[in-house]
Image (cartoon, rainbow, N blue to C red; front, side):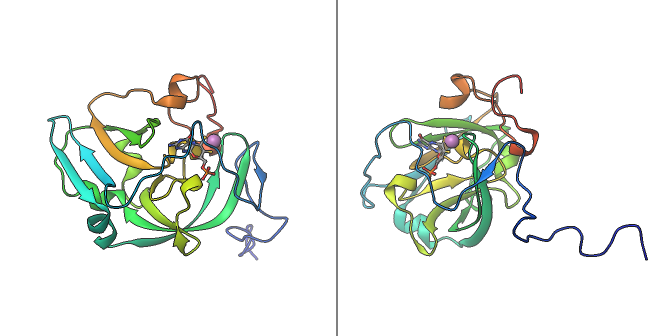
Length: 199
Ligand SMILES: Nc1nc2c(c(=O)[nH]1)N[C@H]1C(S)=C(S)[C@@H](COP(=O)(O)O)O[C@H]1N2
Ligand SMILES: [Mo]
């Protein structure tokens, strides 16, 4: 018999759930919004990616939802300490959208309808780590949770998952978004408990 018993790692049994430090488990789906829920009609809805050259690529609702989509099952972690396991989403991988633009940028500002912003390193949006999600639990994403579509970046604290996402601005230098300017951590890795600046 080896030193490590097979099956010891990678299991998810109740009572054996691994949460990031300081987090607790919730089964409901809290709503956290810094302002009112914007109502965006799908005919006027648009998603864009802008580059440091002033290039701007745009997708209508019809165009975005016609792109290849992925089903995502993932845990989410809010900086206010709730975590929710095994949430189910459908959306378009950010790399699918970024494949259509040329950029030398390493940083991204996500912009939401309503004015919310949050910054994320570009590499954290690639390689199956981030989506423009438009379904939750098999249903259209509800307005209070960011519908019609939100950014989903589940490996970072959930404030990085901009609801009512409107576009991604590619930037040569890092800049702070809404909560980052207010003292939240620039990066926000829940496993390193990067809640606030200096963590
Ligand atoms: N546009 C926008 N996106 C946002 C927020 C917000 O206030 N406005 N709050 C963030 C925070 S702090 C969290 S925890 C999650 C909450 O998402 P939920 O309301 O679907 O749980 O959305 C994030 N995205
Ligand atoms: Mo949050």
